[in-house]
Each structure stands twice: as C-alpha cells, then as structure tokens.
Length: 220
Image (cartoon, rainbow, N blue to C red; front, side, top):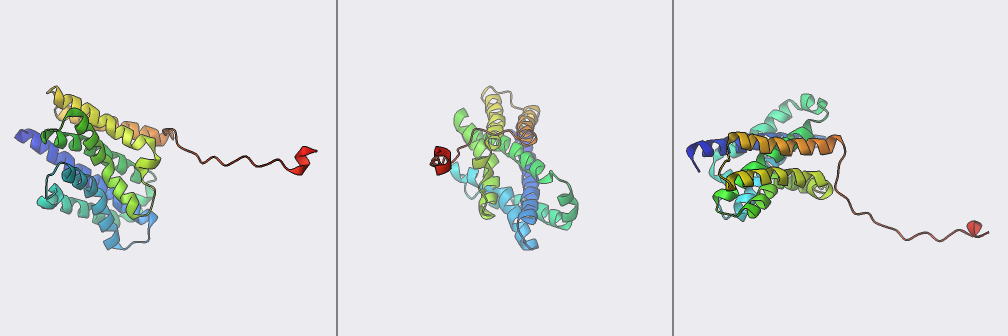
C-alpha cells in the first residue's frame, strides 16, 4: 500500500475509532448506571473490538490497537468526551444510532482494505470487512447483555457488506481511491440510516404457539 493509501487508511480507522467510541460511551450512559471508568471501558471496547477481531483473523499480531497508541488514545478520548458532555449528547435523540452507523461505514471500508493488503481474495475481503464493521457493536451488545444488533436487525450487516463489496471491487479493479472510500462509506451509512428511519428489517423468525383448543362456549 502506498504512503498516500496508508495515510488514508489510518485517517479512516482513527475516525471510525472515534465515532464508535462515542457510540459505546453513549450506549453505556443510556443503558447502564456506569461511572466514568465503565463508560470509557465500553467506549474502548466498542471502538477497538472490530479491528482486534480483524487482525486476529488475518494473523496480524499483536493487533494494531496494541501496536499504535493512537487507537487506544482516540477510543478512550471519545469516551471521556462523551462523559463530560453527556447531557448534550443524550439530548440529541438519534446520536447513538448516527455514531453507530458512522463507525460501521468507516470500518467496513478499512476492514476490506486491510484484508486485501493481506492478500485475501475479494470475497474473503468482503466478509472480513463486514466483520470489522459489525464487530465492535457486537462486542458492545454482549458486554451490556443485549441481543447483538447484527443478529436482530437485518439492515446492520447488510449495509456493511454493501460498503465492503464496493471497496473490494474497486481494489480488485485497481481504481480504489479516497473518493471511492468515501462513497463506499456513504453508501453503508445511508442504507443503515434509511433502515432505521423506515424501520426496515430482514424477515425474522417468530415462535409459533400451538392453536388453543376451542372453548366449550364456541362449540355450542
């Protein structure tokens, strides 16, 4: 990867780390009665979870989050910032969802480019890009004892896969650029937010109970 590409990758990853950190911190403050240590911890877990899973899967050890201090600093800083301005953020009705969608969008792009740089094929890169996007949110939900969004909302993994697919196609055909990265992230973000706004979901399973026997009155 060229120096320009490396710089773009770092910028996108740190930006994704920041917005996912905000999301994790706001989720902690809204869902749980946590002190500042708990809020920052959940911010860091959310911000770094997807990248750590990605790096473990491709054998890049130790993960970038532990090799470069900036990842931890940005994730923790986002948590502190959210805690200090918690009343402002919590007044913004959809801020948690917006930050989650932004982190998803940025990480599906960086996860795909990282996988491609590790010489994975296009399909594998799309899968890893999607995992990178949804990983932080999934770890966040598990920590707060919630069914992971990726398992309960069809338009969570799907937007990440769309953004990852465009990124992989651009990389495979050698026309990937900053503009393509922004476009792929924007597509992912737009699909996710449209799904939230219009309450769009993939078909879900329902528990079907046996039909109740007719009452005596109904037989008369």
